[in-house]
Length: 290
Image (cartoon, rainbow, N blue to C red; front, top):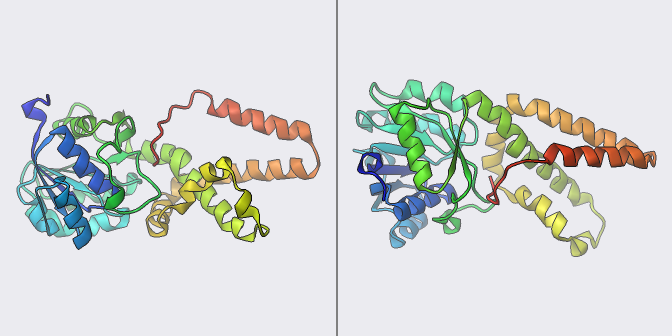
């Protein structure tokens, strides 16, 4: 049973795609919110969420946030500032705004200054998702066991309430500053996606018949390369400062591995593979995609 002081009277979810829909479904399952309001420009997504009982109402973003004590921005990162600017006048005093964005420094620098006095911003990033897109792929269990990074100040009421929300949805909490988040997620999510995109793009030059002999290793590596191009171009460019160093280091190791293979240096190849195993030892991850 969720303590009454940690329940929200009204949660507004702006954007009912995969993540926004999953937030609505998981919030409904958990009972963390007495009322859930959604906002989407998609009539199909609206009907889908209402039909499953994930939301109590769907309307404009302004209507959704009216009276809400928690507002969740589930839109692309670059759309959040303009969206929040348009909603500022509709936010109630004491409301908390959070998000599901994959880049935090840019949002932490921009969003708080758009809020009226008495409204608070706490950044969130649930490390869960899919290469699929749309509310039809949403799930009430998407966040179960996944990590959610929160960038607020522990011990403050807004941060504690946002943490309670994600805990109720089944996520494991990790506290980071916005800069720490961007630097760490660059390694664990953004650069892996960039490498998968690069390989999959190069795969267009593969010989005839290669697709017919692709095995599970190929599918595991390339699954995330099917991610939404518009979404991920926004993420990669928004976190360009943090991505630059790990992407460069990965490129250097790839070049070293290429040279070792070309020169038939099996010891060097084995050393690089062994170093990879050592680097990954003890890595904590879940089966959830990010």
